[in-house]
Length: 321
Image (cartoon, rainbow, N blue to C red; front, side, top):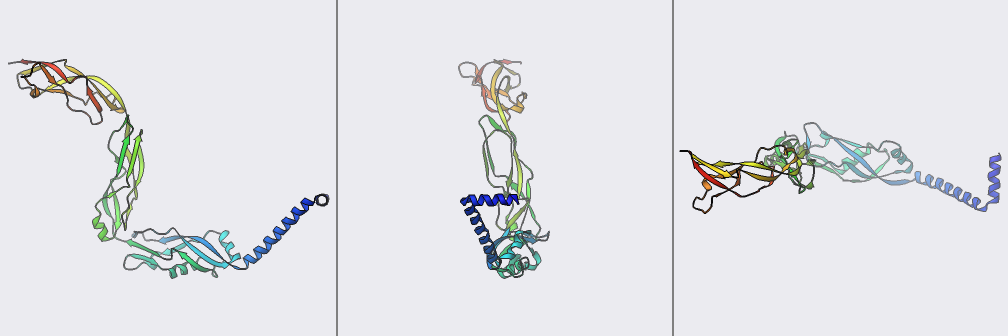
């Protein structure tokens, strides 16, 4: 009682508090009347209903299935509380009930409303359905195994390089379609991918580019492009003489040459691969001087910017006969 006495005293002493209390009372009474009128009158509500088609394992749908239907429903207001306090209704369609002999799954508007009526309140009136019908092509033909090509461009940063071939998680996919379309598909491509300024190995999942009235399994593949940092190297390499005739020996001064190049970090300790040569048949014996051109022979593809400290060396010809 003391609590309510204190409240009553404060209301008597504070006109502002009395006004606030009266305002709250009017709001509550208005809400009750509004709820009573709303719940007992017909109202329209827009709903999203998930769609599911029970498809046999041997069948592949070739066109997209709508994830949801947007429906407008008219019903008593109080009945809509069922939708708010229970799991949202979903529409499950039996594939065999709506498939025809022309490899098409068709559900027209009247059949959609009829099917929706079974999952809503029995007194609900369905005003509108979007999309108004479902029309999907399908096939039950076996799939065709075709190569998949990765449409990808990679551009490493200036001091990096692609060291190794692109690796795909698989080199072929199964394609499903009608007989005519299958006969025309001999390979498929991924969506175009371009990556620039790379400083690390690229790993990505890429989707197969769509083809009308065809589906793929899998729909995407994983790719990997090895990227490595480049490092400058230099070393002296002995010069090889090639194409000298029997009994002829070519002495070179100097006998080696300094080579500078850039190599992937993983090959820094690998000193094999580069050969430096002079070709006996390229010597111009009528020219003044005794110099011969120095050339790069074999070289690993991963090496870049290979340069020689000099482009020629002196030579002396000796015969052993």
